[in-house]
Amino acid sequence: MSHPLIVEAAEQHFVPICVYNNTKGDNDEKTLKRFKEPAWNNPVVRVLDSEGALVVPRLANDWRLSSLAERMVQGLEKAKRKVPLYLKLLAREQVGRRDGIDTAIFGMA
Image 1 (tube, rainbow, N blue to C red):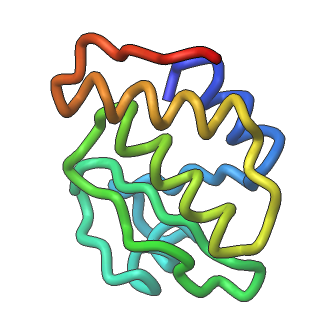
Image 2: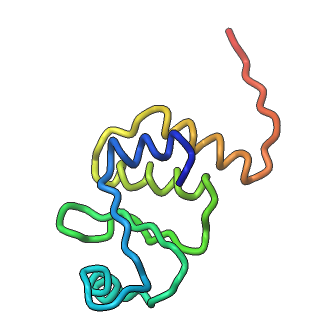
């Protein structure tokens, strides 16, 4: 969540919300119950629509940049919103690194 392009995308194209999973008697506890999240669990990412419905599957136990970038791209696409080119490129680059692609060859005409 600290990569500058992820921060940019989160700020410009999403409404980021942090829910603490270890407090009692507040809205955070209600939100955990709503989404059936246990207290003291590891961080998760959800992409929701304006009605609060899940747009893409919940991201949990996977804190790779590639996974978060992919999920953000998928969320924007499912919401039929324009995906910024920098986010698409970041996702592709990180997936390539994750999957072990070290070299790419491009032909030019």
